[in-house]
Length: 297
Image 1: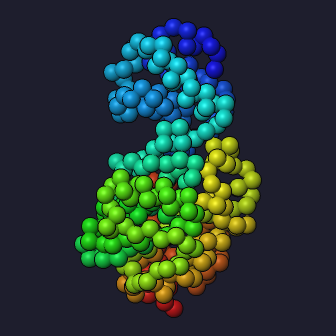
Image 2: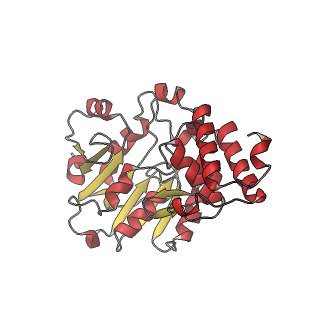
Image 3: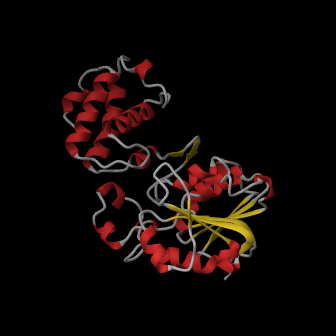
């Protein structure tokens, strides 16, 4: 970033315009909380200046002190020159109204399942209070496990994760929400150390196929590869989940899994299963539902 940017105070509006132009010129990729250059620049500037994230307009003509300009410039340089995801620069990610701590040890939280949990998976879960045990496979930062605990107040929630580093982040998030007594973090590969039955199992597992992994932009390559890579067709982990959850799921229970753009490959892999595809903001091809009864056969 040119040194003249920090020579004298200027308004937030000027700095925002400058950042957007530089973001676009650098060809940054988005998707870690924002979808475009202006929203991401505004977020980083407001966060760095410790201003309310939902109130940009009142501060646009605020004159910034030299130290404020320099603080923002440092963050923008990292975003532009090193392509660091915004969430790693701010150590936070949001799913709806829920804020989670994140760093380079975990994938940045983003999940269509979070949308579905806002309505307690209605109409598939008729009585949220009746869910006594829930499981989050491949929990990462612990975000979905925490959302499960909020959506289903009577549930004990188990959350599994293979990465010890990710488990440390999940532990921090569980503690931040005061859920240590309800959310149990389990280190291990998928079903290790688990005892059912669960009324609800969710998972946002690694599902990026090999061709897509090779084409990921730098922002996504900054995330732990093991949290993204799903093998040649993206279904390595998903196959294990579909094949192995039947023994842990109540016959009337539900399995809900996010699989990215792999719907066709999944249906070919399990032609005898009648998947229910749930409607999300991205469409109806990204999250499937199966019942315990279906998986028992």
